[in-house]
Image 1 (cartoon, rainbow, N blue to C red):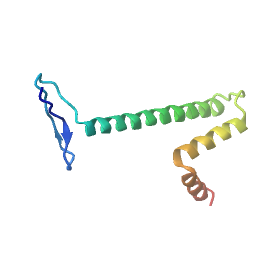
Image 2: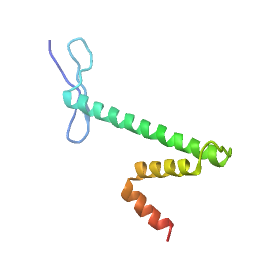
Image 3: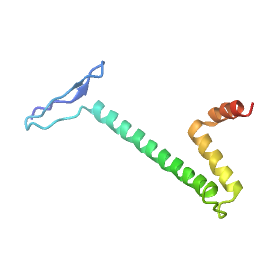
Image 4: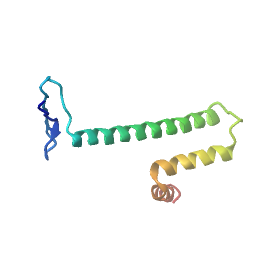
Length: 100
């Protein structure tokens, strides 16, 4: 059985290859890159879901006047979301800019 690979050259060009049955075969480096990209997508999806939950919390507190959400809880959640998204250094820089 002849094994032929799909691979990227140093310019990012994809070279495709087929085995003797006409099926595409991925080179191990391409498989690793795909797995890495899948992990990045998964992390972004988690971050998006988390931020959406904070936006919903803000909407409930401010627009719907939901008293079941305390101000301290609300503030803590917003701070955590900002720091997780921007990083603590990014948050510190941003807060200095907006509180001048």
